[in-house]
Length: 555
Ligand code: C2E
Ligand code: MG
Ligand code: MG
Image (cartoon, rainbow, N blue to C red; front, side):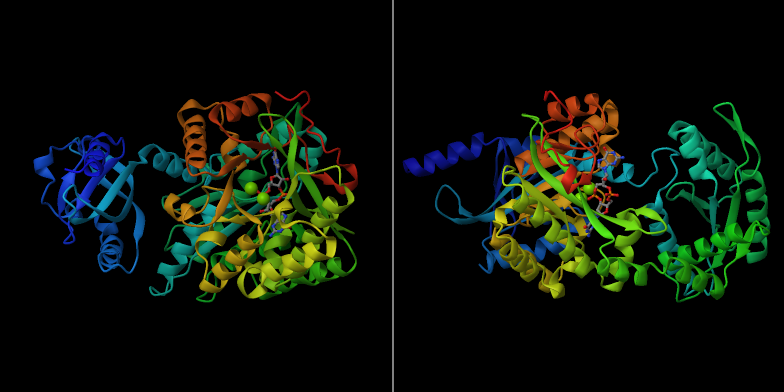
């Protein structure tokens, strides 16, 4: 044995990482103690067996194809996440990396390294579950409800069935919220959700949407007649007086029903039900209204967000607010996130959740994105004393064909801003389900020196490995999660596992929605690098920025 071979053998044996050597036919020729410990097996049970014997069936095809490519030298390495059962029948999640190598006598081998990522994986799953439910009521949230509805619509079409949905809303909710305060508003929502839940039949799904609006998807097979009768009962139930903060409130409830056609998407079906609900509110007579095309037109005319948004862009009703992102170690403002706002002449301040989807559907997201980018550059250009960065939200619709890289190049040169001062926030789907055209655009952007950050990490469906395979500099953990800091079983476990993953992957992590000192302290303890949230500063217009964190003194 040469000394080099001796060193290899020693490091193979001692490596804390599960390591195995595979022959070109995929059978194990050698395994180290760390790997045996992971599997909970002796060497005899593994040596000479084929690697696929230990793989989860879902991962076989992918692994097989890649392994063939590796053996044929089409690729030099590959990586995937998989799970297997150890000898104690526990599921162990591992990240497997396979490359070329040789054994101690120089025979060509494939070297497989296995890292146990069970804890991170569990945290990721937990996080995803947490982000599908409304925190106040515990009901499914909009995202979750739309996913359920989508599945129901998919199975309804071939069966020639219809899905019936009911949108429910209270039109005096804002008054309660502003006059009696948020605690009373929250209490009202909780009691309404309980009243609705009380009326549910088996197979129904109820979800809380925004503010005081709820959506009920009736169990499959529910006829329109019975849905209508039940809706009337539910609305009557919701209108029962309730005492809040010493005041008797009579909720002004209304419902709107829509029945699916084969052309409906989950989104449009809900929109139709909401349009019918608005008609109920408007008429003041009917408590429940069935959707007709008239309602859609009425809503479109009334809000006509798209044409209004077009006008807003022309007439500078749009503006951008900036929210500080603070370095947890020093308490200084490291960056600002640019958040679009719409000063509507009638509706007042409109928040992005309402108009970004419309902008995306209509293509207006491209000029809107350019506007936000210009304001972000303006912030940097007008405040040379600030040396940090701006984070800009980018929707998938701005990437690929819309040539984000070109848009960025133009804006940066117009304002004479260094590319390193800008980071783009993309959703998981934006980065991970990209077409070749979109990937090329993203690559061009990173080549320019602009960092990509995954926004609302954990709410999408990406595996951790896919994150690692993309040029991601940082991830942002959403507020749904940071509000659970302090809950040892879920929030804290997720937080520390995720912070560990982020650091181990060489990325930086931003926790969003930090509202209290306690949350800040825990985020710091868990190893997050940056914090964003009302504790450090609310989104504010450019002229009102102090470039200091509101959380003074730091730490
Ligand atoms: P996001 O990027 O995850 O932004 C964070 C949201 O959380 C912002 O809401 C912010 O105002 C809010 N927030 C920050 N700290 C706290 C806190 O401590 N407590 C609470 N309760 N909320 C906090 P906002 O401004 O309504 O934005 C909503 C979403 O709209 C953003 O989520 C982003 O996905 C999207 N968005 C905003 N501006 C743009 C834009 O210019 N382009 C695109 N494509 N999307 C945008
Ligand atoms: Mg964001
Ligand atoms: Mg976010």
